[in-house]
Image (cartoon, rainbow, N blue to C red; front, side, top):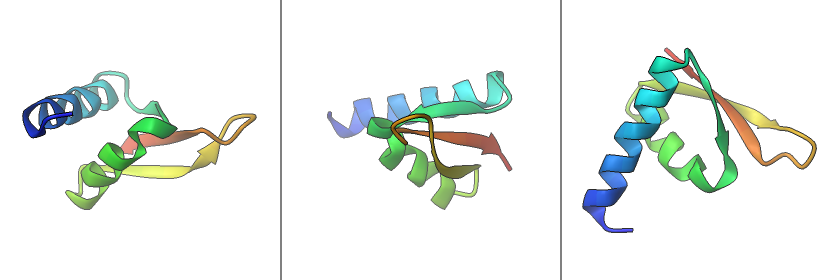
Length: 60
């Protein structure tokens, strides 16, 4: 993924969390979600689901 696409996808991920008042984030997107956590925009819960491959993102 190019840096431009990565930033676009990260913005879309954040918009989804805002629009849906939280969101379940699949394991493949955890690195992007962690960037949003580092920026102080969201919190990210522990692993969830039967196989532990989802985390709940919430607005701060």
